[in-house]
Length: 166
Ligand SMILES: [Zn+2]
Image (cartoon, rainbow, N blue to C red):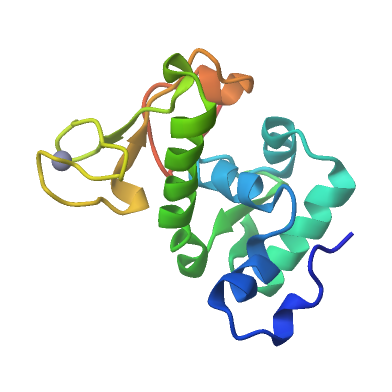
């Protein structure tokens, strides 16, 4: 099940990172947390991962202080990124840019804007208007027609990391 159990004795920083986030589904789970999904069921539906795998991945991410389990509304616990987890945004942003350029049709690409000025971020995550690369909390995700997940598709433009409520 575990991918690359032999990475943890390496000095290569990429290998060390993959030891934590390199398993299948893990980055997609982290992405759904950036998009504001917080409940176990919502994450599972959005990512399309089995309960057993989702539980295993979340447990690992909590052990590594990338994700925290926190009390939610009602009886449901929720999951959120820790400050260490939020530092993964440039990683996801870079992967998204590479994937969009090579594998995604232009009409299906994710549009991100800068919260402070409303400008569309370029392929490198830069706001050309403000001449900065905003941190995740200042990035706004525009909903896409192609989003399979109804919670993501039906949303208005939404700031990353703000909880998506029904
Ligand atoms: Zn801006």
